[in-house]
Image (cartoon, rainbow over the protein chains, first blue to last red):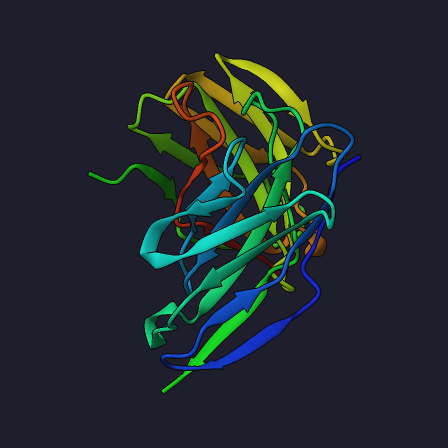
Length: 115
Length: 113
């Protein structure tokens, strides 16, 4: 069975500061890792993914994430936060790689960027 | 040019009723999904369909049944609604070119009274 842990319910960051949203995972095979963002009253939007290759992956809106196999982590980062980044962020994992299986999501982390 | 659409956006109904939620995608994707998001924002997969075949079926009650008339549609039928079914239901789709990227609909907020 696969699982995802997002240890922080909420992360508060001042605008302009760097941000990190933490995620750790557990899978039996090779991990396929994702970050999605949900704005209020909206569906989830894909941000970025790690399938293979470079451990640092870049995604939409200036976000990036670093895959760390030894720590089984896939933390989301951004060098300079914007107020508009405030949203609910979900980390997700799949071990099938085939896409037809659904993703297993973490419980989500509220990111609040303070002006 | 909405990619994944759902109707209705809001659905309020009484216990015991039968209701349906419709989902359509115009992305040409092969796989569609239904997720349930509870009041604590926890998101869980319910079903996925690939080329009209059920791929996975998580341990959801058999009161829930997905129906896919064609590749672009995956509707969710719910019989004998219960209070615990109140949640936001999201439809999503993914294609063979980028099978790991799922596109989500705006969600349907179901309230059972």
